[in-house]
Amino acid sequence: LVAAIEASTEPPPIPAAALDDAKTYRVEAPAPAKPKRSIEQMLGAKWLNWVGVVFLLLATGVFLQYAAMQGWINEQARVWTVVAGGAALIGLGLWGRRRKTPIFAASMTGGGVAMLYAAVFAASPSFYSLIPMTSAFALMCCVSTIGIGLSLATGYASMAILAQFGVYLTP
Image (tube, rainbow, N blue to C red; front, side, top):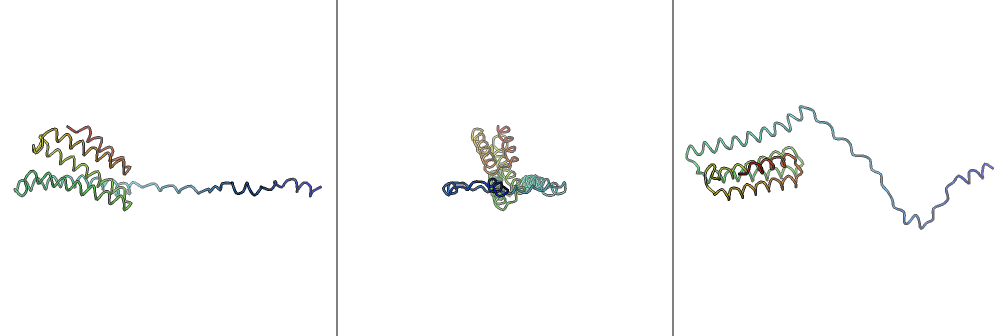
């Protein structure tokens, strides 16, 4: 009687055709949770990086003002210097993204877009009058499009916020 009960509790064999059609499922372990950053890491890595970009932008402005007062460069050279600096910062930010340094990359890319906004504003009739207002508006729209495109490509929310402010501040 015990042998009959043991024989009846065994599952029926699976046909070979069913085994060929069966899909195999792989169960993966969940990804480990990201460690929470301390206030020291946030202050040292993120906040000081943004403060550094702000000081870089201010230092660029002070240098260009000093160079203008000394007669070293004219208005067109000042604007083109800011455009080149903005493009260099965007390139540096994209390089930093490839190197897997997201905080550095976001701050450099954001600083580059801010410099492009400053260059177009400096060339507009509101400042140096190098280009007409319609051209300044079109260039500001182009810089806003660059900022939005960079935020979509990189996934940086800070870039999207900067681009949104730029859209609202476009004359």
